[in-house]
Length: 166
Image (tube, rainbow, N blue to C red):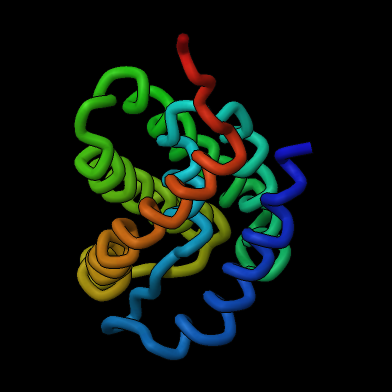
């Protein structure tokens, strides 16, 4: 039941990302709120629905973008896996874990997207796309990561309250 809250949240963020954020790029890079959200959700210690949020977010992004469906599914699944691995190891500094995971996840999602475009015989100048798309996208994702982490930390505490010890 707690997974169902992902649909309106991720849907609203996708609409905001598509309708507003895509019109304010940094060079040609844009922020990926869905990726940041699923990473922030996966890093919460009591959350058990990280994989489901990742798949729902990937399906939403695959539906509205022109890239093949498997690209966001692969990229977001890798990002969730990294977030869960980091959550088990770096639990004392959650903001650092968020920044590291968003950096790595953004880089990997962009690289998976570029590889899929290359496999579709779409000519992409590699260094130029890294300089004007990937690096600005990572910067914007890092910029939005702290506020989204705080918001989803509060949501996770509300949905998964810690039990009181007596």
